[in-house]
Each structure stands twice: as C-alpha cells, then as structure tokens.
Amino acid sequence: MNKKIRRIIETLGKHEDTEAISVLEELGTNSQDDEVRELTSQVLVRKNIHDSLKVVIINKGKGINDMSPVVAMSTINEILNLENKSEAVKILDDTINMHSDEEVRENARSVKSLLSLS
Amino acid sequence: MCETLEKKKGYDPMGIRAIGANIASKVASPFTRKSTSTNPFEHNSFSGRVFKGSALISADLFQSNKVKEASKLKMMSASVVAAVSNFGHRISQPIINFAKNVKAGINNTISAIKSVPQKVNEIGKNVSNKITENLEKLNVHKEEAKDTVKVLNMHQINTKASVADLKNTWLEENKIEAAKKVSKEVA
Image (tube, rainbow over all chains, first blue to last red; front, side, top):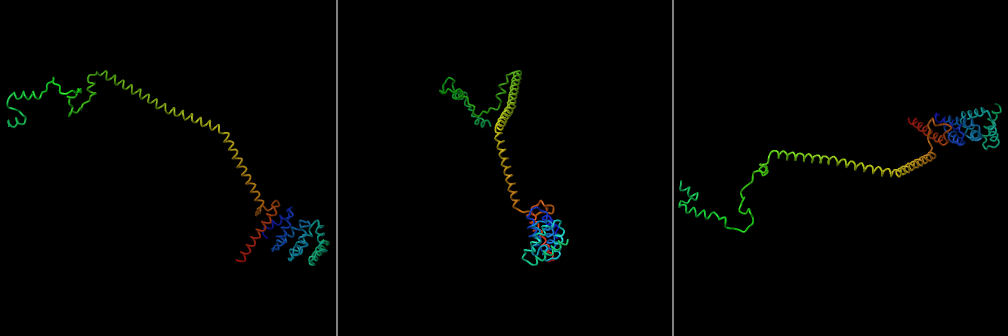
C-alpha cells in the first residue's frame, strides 16, 4: 500500500469531521486492495463511535463480513482490543436481532461470542 | 623721307599765314558765349581718364604726425570703449536670461506647490483604489480556493487538512497506482 494512502486513512480515522467516516467507507472499504480495506476497517473500529462501528459490522462484504478472511479477522481482533466495547455490543445485538441477511447475523453472533469470552 | 613725314603730320609748307588762320579757327574766344548751361564742369571732360590714386593719402599729406597719432589714439580708445561696452552687453544678456530663467523656475515651483494638495489627494485616491482592487482580488482568490479542492503533499496530510482535500488526494493517488499497475502489466 502507498505510504500516502496509509497516511490519509490514518488521518481520516483521527479527523473530527464526521464526513471522514463516509470517505473511509466510500474509498477504503470498497477498495480492491486488501491492505487498504484492512487498515480502513481497523481505523473505523478505533474511532469507536456508532457511525464508524456500524460500517464494519452490519454491511455485507465490509469489516467482519469481508470476503477476505485476513480483513475480517483483523477487524474482529480490533473490536476485541477496544477498551470500551459497549457501543460495539449494542450494534452487534441489533444486527443479530434485526438484520435481514442471515450470513451477516451469523458473523455478528460469532463476534459477540468472542467478546463474551475475552 | 621728308615729304612723307610732312604729309603724315599735316605740315603745311605754305607759311605762317596759314598757321595763324588755322589757330584762329581752332582757338575759341573766351569772351564768346557758346551755351546757356549752368553746369561748371560742362567744358571739363574726364572721359578716358581713370583715377588710380588714393584720395585719403593725398588728403593727409599736409597733416602732421602728432595729429595722426592723436587720431589713432582716439580710434583705439573708441574701439576699446566699444569692445568693453560690447563685452558688457554680452555678459549682461546671459545674466538677464539667467535671471529670467530663475524667475520662471520659481514661478513654476510656486504653481507646483500650489497644486501639491490636489496631487496628494489624487495620489491618495489612486492608492486607495489600488488597495481596494487588491483586496477584492484576494477575496476572489479566497473564494476560488474555497471552491477548488487541492491535492495535498505528504507534509500537508494531517488532521488540519479538510476532508475534501484528503479525499481528492486519495483519489489522485488511486489514479497513480492504477496507472502504475497498467504500466507493469504492459511491461
């Protein structure tokens, strides 16, 4: 991955403007490069706010639901490393209970199990 | 020989009678009045005579040397006086012209000083107009900068940069990466 792109992703993860999350979702999680998607998911999890966690938990093909196991496992590991997991657990519960896609619900259930074990 | 000479000169060998008759016929009587003209030079003919001398020299012939020297001294003194007066005239004219120029210059400066406040006002107006024009241009540039999105370099990528600039930079980098991949595939 390009150093400049890495720096842009990290800067957007620290940016106070909430518009940065939509940019990360648009350009980062939809990137063809696995490294870019992995780093973008990690950054979104570290923000630890509802809008950023929602992107990597409830969207099919992004974050914990990514087709690449490396990207999915890296996102799950980042969620497990959060100090305050309350917002992540809340979104996981809503996904398990209300999401229309069975695969997404199954992934959310697995992550919640890991959180309960950690 | 004698005969030929006598014929050429018109000598009449007849005697003194003939000579006396001829003289009487040739010499006019002074008491006879030939004309009534009042011209005194009527009978003095200068035809054929050319004057080659100097009338002044002959006129000064009877003057003494002292008089000549005195007249020369008078002439010299008169020439000196004339030269001095001419010299004074030559000097005085430039001085007068110089004085006229100085006067004209002073008048010009006075008129310029009188018109200085107006010029200062004009300069001030011009300066203020230029400043306002520049400020307007700066405002326009700022508005244009707001509208246009920049491509940031490595040092400009930080949390102070706008999200739009970061996004634009990211898109540009993606284009560069795609071009590199295409070039690698072609190679």
